[in-house]
Length: 640
Image (tube, rainbow, N blue to C red; front, side):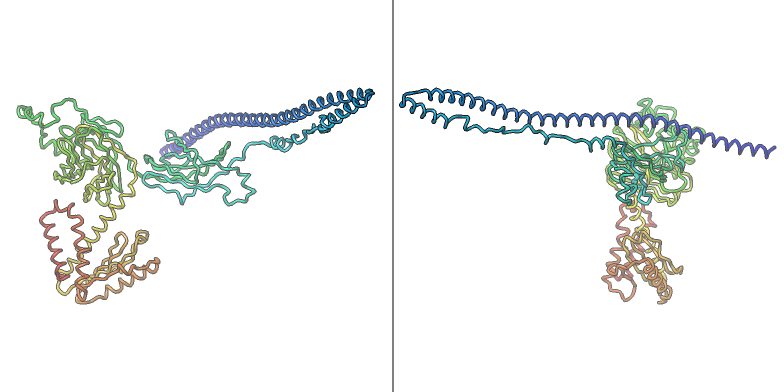
């Protein structure tokens, strides 16, 4: 019976999967059909437009040629009409002269005859008939305007659709995802083909890119997932899509080429992982006077009384019930009553952090007066607890009520920060390493950092009093965070190394050898150098250099030499050359005092001086004693 039920469950699961697959298939076919109808209507309309343009061009060219022929005809007609008129005038003059000559022949008087003959001779000399050209100035030939459109006619008969461009290929190695920006590059199809193949592929006018967010590593769209988003008219073989919110695990990208009339097939889609921290406000935890609306929280008081301590001071004195919650209420968890109450105008995020690195941003709205942002242990935060006033919450508090103030709060201790109120705050939480950083994003300034060890699941936490805030999630850890990480790592590495040396120098007959090797930026791209594993030798790697620290006792350097040889071997294997101008070795004995003082000032003293404004205010007496002990030991070594 149980076996049959299990088999039936597997069949049901298979049928459910097939059912979902068929639904997706039918939806895809339906959308393809709609796309076919739209595309066919579009290409038909484009064809009519092109034919109309072709007809208009033919009409314009015909009118131009007719005008040329007509102008030539009119010019020749004018010439011939002019000749015709001149010929008629010459003919009339000639006939009159001929009649006068015939009459002269009948004159019997010699004197009159000679006189008439002389007149005839003079008139003949000046007669138009003898000055007129006896042939037409223009011919009737118009053969130079004969047209032959046989080639054009053949071209029109060969007229067909443009060849469809071939499918481009996405260059996966050149595709980059960084700072919520996706850069996609591709290679045009047939780029290496011969010229004879280019006509087959067709000219490429532009490209079209489509991308879609999904939570599945598959190009098939599941029900309810986002549709393809399009970017048109891309002239280059790459495009950058910026300002994205990574609220899904993957983004799928495809591209196709397009010419004037036709679009080719889409390329094979590629799937890129888009890891980011996504969360929203947990409205169930919000104080009753906080309004959660999408990614915004605003403070909407139900009445004036009870929100400004100065306004309610007299009322509290006469009230029989104190506004301060009892210890039993604050100590316990919220249990079933999830909403914050009292003066804790707080709301939590709805996604826990149990590992990894997370980043989000906060922007105060225009009318804000006071807010806090940070992280907290959900289980340890009571209904009346305020952020930063317990051991389970860390926050940055900003206020412009009465006066501007900015402070970091934890465990009921506040540290004032000397910095203008930021317009955009970035919150970075590295759960595994216990780092919590607050960044002024507009100025790229580290406001404050907490270093601790998280032991419970964390949630983002917010407090709003007067005004409101807006958050931005779905963000990757920005690249500019690397600047803060590298600085912190360098300071931490130097501090750790100095502490390591200082403990050794407490014993008589001891000294230390320090070898600092600068490799440049290439070191960040390689694995760490191997070590011999001897406990008296420590290898420290920071941003672009490696430090070998050897603790020597009674002049025995047998463990130090193999470590240096191992480092040299590793350098040769990784094609690294040492920067000899910056590679130095320090030793307690036989070293010029000037060099020791330079090392102390640049390496030892710079560590506490660089960060003293951050930690000195909260340093304990024990911390200050350790610092003094370090300085004195260093002074003894360098003899200053």
